[in-house]
Length: 252
Ligand code: FES
Image (cartoon, rainbow, N blue to C red; front, side, top):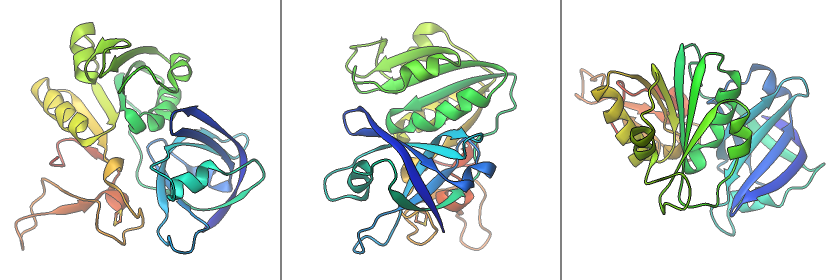
C-alpha cells in the first residue's frame, strides 16, 4: 500500500475527471496498467481500479482519468479531492500493452480512452488513433492530436463518423499491423472479430470487467481459449492475469 498526494484535479467533460497524483509508484509504471484507489469511507472496503492515463516519470506523477459512476460512490468521493489531499493507492497493477509494432492502431471507446493516451505517447512507430464517444461531449481529443492523426466516431453522429469505431475504420479505410484497444465489451468483441477476419494482431484491455482489482471478488473472470484438462473450461482473472490479453486468447 502506498500513499499519493493530489497535485491537481479538473473536470474534462460530464462525469469525467482528471487527477494528477504524486507517487513513487510511477517509476515502474507501464501503459495499460492500473492502480487501485481506496476511498476514505469505511463502508466501502474494496478499492476502485482506475487505469493509468499518463506517466510523468520526471516528476513522479501519474494521471488517472475516470468516470464518476453516481453519487455516494468511490469515484464521486475522488472527484472531490483537491490539490494537497492524500490518497491511498495500490499499484501499479496488471500487465500493460505491448508497444513494439511497426504500425499500430490505438482504439479507445468511452472510459476506455484514457489508457490509450500514454500508449500514443510511448509508441515510436506509425500510429493511428480512433476514439469512440457517445456524442460531442468528448474529452482528451486535443491531447491525442499531439501524438498522431485522430479519427472520431460518435454514436449520435454529431462529430466525426456516425456510428462506432469500426464504422470510422471502414469509412476512413484505416489499417495497421496491430490493434491495441480498450473500451466496452461489445466494442472489443467487434474488434476481435474484425482483427481475426483481417489477420491483424490485436490486444484488448478488458478493464471494464474489473471490480475489486485485487483478485478477491472473482467478478472479473473471462473465458480463455486454453482449456483446463479438469473442467474443460479455463477462466482468466482480468485483474491479475490482464487486463491486456491477445484477442486470440480470450472469449468475449
Ligand atoms: Fe475482483 Fe478481479 S476484479 S477478482
